Length: 289
Image 1 (spheres, helix red, strand yellow):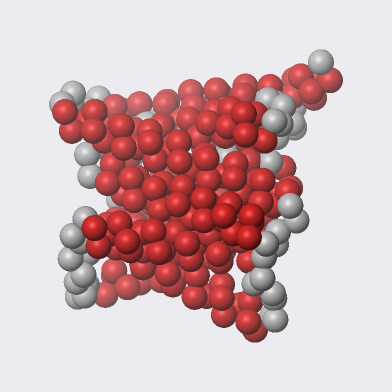
Image 2 (cartoon, one colour):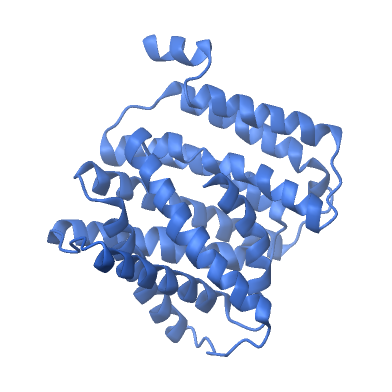
């Protein structure tokens, strides 16, 4: 999951230009939903679920697949990826708080400590990029869009955990949630007057296929399995890990130059992950208190 989502940052760059960003999100999840539907039919998996689960899955489709991605795509037109990466670390805090409020589940101190270390590490990794930021109204707009995007992503994560707590299978949940998301996204695109165009660049089709199969079907399947096994608060730590993979790919394909702060930042992010996952003595001691 980390390897795939770390590479989708690069794949998404091939989506901009010819096609409205909102429609690119819709195409991505439409293809993913068709693949999941085909898989369920081949494996003879039942798609019948209770009405109250459908309502919750529609909520996931709206929050996680519609509002999260459309707002995030829009924000990246106004702010640099460094700010997006740093703000995404706030998802862990959102997940912890929403999980407490909506699911009445305890706040795990090791997750909060790990998230704080992770955020500090991400800040060090992208430190030189922040020097390029200039204050203007578009910067504030981009930050607001990204902040709202990650809030809805966290809300979708917590609703997903509630659905999985009911014993709903991951594959069926993802199919219905993505299907509802596609309906919402296409509806929003129509109301916003998005122009339906056929891209001519072959790289668009390669990237949309990669984002659909790997970035959506496989990665979201793995992510929801993590949510089911360890909770949405711990699973959200992935947002602090996959930027490291993105940097490695940026080094290979975009000429990213590593600096001392970046190496230190990576080490701190990994340390934070160990704390959040309960792999260090401090984590185990926190749980016993």
